[in-house]
Length: 101
Image (cartoon, rainbow, N blue to C red):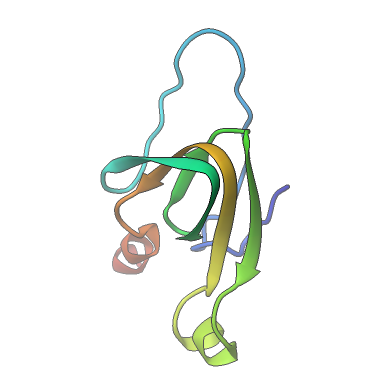
């Protein structure tokens, strides 16, 4: 799945890694690891998700009404279910984009 031009001006791209070895991850702010337990549901602001295990299921939905969507930011959230790990960034990159323009 992929969406372009919706999230924080930077778009969204999914990469799937398998095999032996490590992967370098870069994020805006600190990276926070969060374990999602089986049966747990977690709702995450779209700008904070960095990576997740492929054992997790997700959906993307609009958050709030039209006013929030147009005046309060993107207004999208991820709902994550299953068992696995998430990597979240502690800061919102849209703030960085705004300060750079």
